[in-house]
Image 1 (cartoon, rainbow, N blue to C red):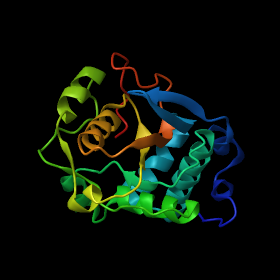
Image 2: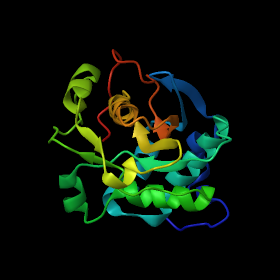
Image 3: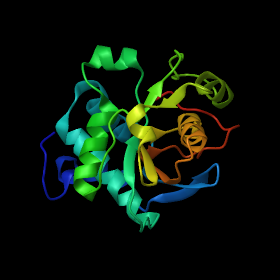
Length: 208
């Protein structure tokens, strides 16, 4: 892929661009507005894996572009800070970098808003989410996130972002952590979502 600074989707062929150019999907998670840009499908999965596993800049630009497009749909019109769902420490070690921090930094630059690096930390080890049912994912991540010292000093509401949301279990856990710290969450945004939405009883795609 080659980065286009005007529209990163030009790095994709016409057919592969289609999922990213459709209408964003607006829903809610635990009463907080949720929006994603592209529905999960094989060509979209390829972009996610290139960004996450290969640290591909062009793929990360596409995910960032999608998150920014979804943000426009939820009409966040007050000052906010961006925070990202973290990858596991093991994944960060294997990849040699933090995908969430790289994505958040990119989106923050595009939106002109501050991004708080490492706002959420894992306080206990969790299993790999891939292949788990929606119920098992929720159990797996329950109580696993805590706010870092830096995040506890955030003076503004936040918007939580992620590359892909399947069942919403990680987003729900992030909402719990911010609620416990009395920090308002204005919206939760992902580049990609599944056709099943984020219902707790719905099937889960193994794409994380």
